[in-house]
Structures are given as structure tokens and as C-alpha cells.
Amino acid sequence: MNLPPPSLSTARPAPTGDAPSSPAEPDHSHVFDTDDARKAVALRKMKRVATLLLVVAAVVFIIAKINEDRGSWVGYVRAVAEAAMVGALADWFAVTALFRHPLRIPIPHTAIIPKRKDEIGRSLGNFVESNFLTAEVIDERLHGARIGERAGTWLAQPANATRAGDAVADVLRGALEVLDDREIQQGLEHLIESRVRATPVTPLLGKAIDLTVEGGHHQRLLDAVLVGVGGFLDDNRVTFRRRLDEESPWWVPEPIDDRVFNKIYTAVTSFLDDVASTPDHEIRDSVDTRVAALAERLRADPELHAKGEAFKEEMLDHPEVRRWIESLWTEAKRGMISAADDPTSELRVRLVNSLQQLGARLAEDPDMQRKIDRWVSDALAYLVENYRTEVSDIIASTVEKWDGESTAEKLELQVGRDLQFIRINGTIVGGLAGLVIHAIGQLL
Image 1 (spheres, rainbow, N blue to C red):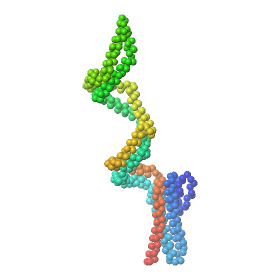
Image 2: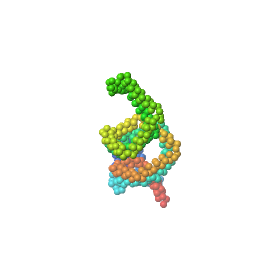
Image 3: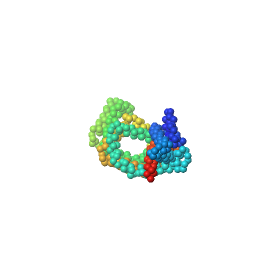
Image 4: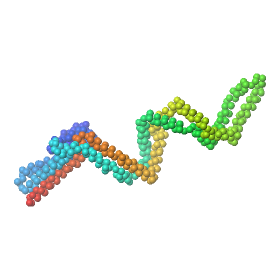
């Protein structure tokens, strides 16, 4: 049984004859990868060795049979060679019957693998499922692996944290690109609108005013208003003076208008300066009181509440607001993809720093390491307990898709070389058995 080397886009050497097996020689021309090519060459060499032993035994038998009358010792040699041939042929038949019909003769119970490949595939899947894909096996394999500590030590290195950050960024970018933008946008719009509609406006404004008063922000706002009013008066002093001329009776002398305007202008600016420079000015107290009253009305006044809700609905229905809401996901997605692609972006920098800090903490925190180890073990146990049947089905269905000849060839490439030792051992053991049997026969 001789196996020609596989085709690897180079000239293929002619196969060497192998008397017992050459009629059933399989075609391995479909084998392309280097590992299969190496195995095919090794298998071919071992077949040559096994066949050579059979040929040697046959030659020795013939020579011994011809010269058997030259002495009793020749009988021992003939017996050894005869038994070696029987052992070699029997084991050749047994090994060949696994993969094909010996000499292409459809002998019953031969070509076992091609005929029963589907059963073998199912049995192999069940074997893997029952003996490898179990929670106990996973827990045993992970026990003492110190996954948490190793992961922390690895992540604590800046170069590794950068690599992990690159991987996370790739996953993020890939996830963003495959998402259905329309579904996400509709969901986001619904979320925003439902949350806004479910939140009363006026009580929220009342709470905001309370927080503003507690922090004294309204007084700073008043200071800014006073400064703005003062600047407005300075910028428009000429305008106000001209307006006074227009409103003043024609018979009032201009010097009197000047004195009246200066008096009023000075009084107003002095009042503004006084309010601005006096923390406990009565105007400020009045503002406090009115602001507090407004906050209370916003929380309790049904009329203001109704107006606030109507204003909220009007804003939600405004075309500009609608366009802004509709653009949220598109802009957010564009920004995240751009940040994920840019190694210098704040997102990537923060991601790498966070991963490195996580790794440093994980490398030094035994409690956290134990939690990570338990999480990994529980997660893998859950996966194998709930999806191991799918793995078994994948193995079975994959084998079912193979044709019988290809299945036999694949398996022969994997174990055929070792099976040739059966032929070699059969030749040797058969010869020794023949020697013993012949010796016993002589003694009797």
C-alpha cells in the first residue's frame, strides 16, 4: 500500500510500487498545505519499509524452501520467513481495511472509515462533548492558571496596554460600522422624546433656581446685569441726550436740559454702582425674595405648569429641534469612529491609560484576581454547558459533508504512519511466533 506525495505546485515524483497495496493507491493530489505534504511523505516512507520487510520475508522463504534439505536449521529459517509473511499480510489487510477495500476487492467489513464516516463523526462529536466540554474539565484546567494575575501583569506594561487598546478600538469601530443606523437613530429619538415628555419642565426649572440661589449664582448674574446696564448707558449717552432734546418743550433752555439730563444720568449710574458695591443692598434682598417666589410658583402653580408643558411640546415639534435630535446618532457615530481610528485621540489615550491602570491594580490585588478567575471559569462553564451540543453537531456535520474517500485520506494522513508500525511489528512478531511454533514442533 503505497502513498504518492501530494501535489504542491511542483513536479511530483513517480510513485514507487508496493505489491500488496498499489492497486488501491489513493490520490492525494488535493492535499495542498505543507503539514499534510510532510505527513504524506512520512507515510509513504513507512509504507516502503513495511512492504520491504514483506518482500524480504518472501525472498527468504523462497530461498529457504528451495534449500530446505541442506540442514535442519534451514527449516527454522523457512518457518520464520513463512510466519513473518503471514503476519505482514494479515496486518497489511487489517490496516488497509480501515481506509479502503484491499486490492479494490469489495470484501465485507472493509473500507470501514469511508462506509461509517457519519457514525464516526457523531461518535467523535459525542466523545468531545462528554469528555472535554464539561464544566468540571474547564474548572480543573483553569484552576491554578492565575488568569487574573497574568492578565494584570500583561496589561500593566505600556506596550501591551497599547496593543489591547488598539484591539478594543478595532472592536468598537467594527461594531459601530455594522450597526443599523436607522434602528439606532429611531431608538435614540424615542428615548430622548419619552424622557423629555415624562419630565415636567416647571418643577425642574424651580429646582434649578433653588440651586442657583443656594450657590449665590443669581447675585453674580445680577452683578453682570448691572455692569451690562452701566455699559449700555455709557455707550448710548449721546442718544439719550438727543432723545431728551426731542421730548423737551421748545421753550425750555438747553442749559436746563443739560442739567436735568446730567442729574438723571448721574443718579441712575450712582444707583447702579451702589447696588453693585453693596452686598446687602435692599435691591439684592428684593431679588432674592422674588427669585424664591418664582421658584415656588414654578413648582406649585398649575397654570405655569401647563404653560411649561405647552412650551416643551412646541419645542419638541420645532423643525430645528427635530433635525438636531435626528442628527445626534450620526454625529456621535462619526465622532466615535474618528476617535477610534486616531491613536492620539482623547478616547484612545484615555482607553490605554485606563487599561494600564486596570492591569496594575489587577496585578497587585489578590481579591480582584480571584474574582476575575471565577468570572472566567463561570463564563466558560456556562458556554460549554449551554453550547457544547452545538460543538458536537459541528463536528458531526463537518464529517458528514466530507466524502468517504476524502475522510479516509484525511485520517490516513494523520495516523497512517503510526499504523505502518503495526505491519512492521506483525512481520517481526509473526516471524518470532513461527520460530517458536516450529521449535516446539521439532521437540515433539
